[in-house]
Length: 128
Image (tube, rainbow, N blue to C red; front, side):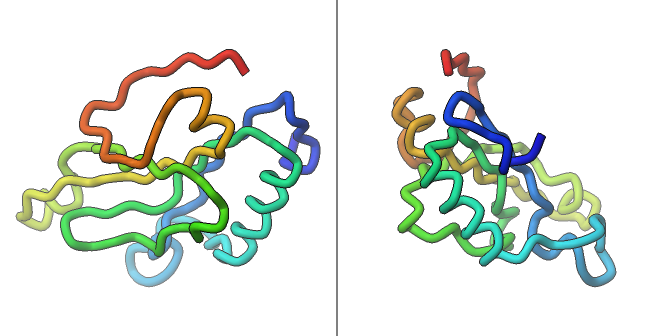
């Protein structure tokens, strides 16, 4: 199944590679998804009223991984505290990683979530 097959009865979770992890000496993934392609795909999901969550950007210490998604999408961004960065630890630094989870408007409304830093993520069950 792909997002082309999804209907408004479905929930789609997307976790494309982080920016800066597909190029250079720290390359960990085969290919980066172009941001304009991602935004166009999200616009299409929103138009079709598909419920979705997207793990996309984030930060470790002062280093940011990618720009925020455009505000016109109307997504709710949660910054999930993923704990101490193992890569920073190996480099002798004590830094915390925050990962972004973007919620489509209907998911944000169903959970009552608003944009914030989530220090202790909790499990949420939804009747979709």
